[in-house]
Image 1: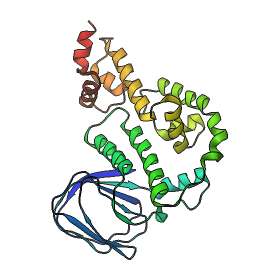
Image 2: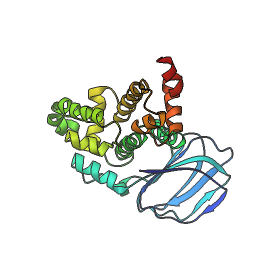
Image 3: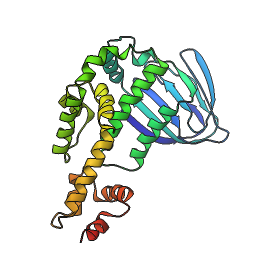
Image 4: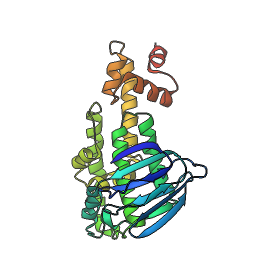
Length: 271
């Protein structure tokens, strides 16, 4: 999944034919702004309010786009068709396709908004397991779009036998996480360890542990960092890198948000 956060000036936009599923989210109201666009033979005019979502499926050409007033703080998320193909394979339903999603404007979907704001939060401020969070968000977002704005998925009964074996499989992934906290973990790798599809893994991990994979990894890395801070021979930069952060500054910001003090202050409290 790719994402970008930007503003748009008023005026006409060039015609486009997206090669990926595009989800556009207005994160705040743009006073007096309306978006007019035409695709799949449909003309749409939408006021830009906080939480408004636009969907543009793969291959739907937009040849007439106009923005009446400047737009601020617009999030664009792009899902490759392979995300939908993987979901179709999981459920054995060939109707689930990126190009089967409807061309829609003025969508009010709290789940899509929540996912979008989570992705935006990672763009604004890095976290230790941000890549995993974004990967989980991509899985959930693909499933939501396919379920609500494309064809229905088949019954979950076909997964019941697999579900019964999930606690042991999830425990394997938990053990793997704890042994590899300093590595760049991904949902795909953890799902492979558990012998599950990425989508099924993310769903079952939450059911078994009560946490998302992203939340679990973040918590485990934070506890690991706390233990490492007790050893004054280990620099804070080294602890940051071993905790999955790209810099000491990003680590310090995330640590203070979670613990209420900086890593240096926490180390002093340990005596």
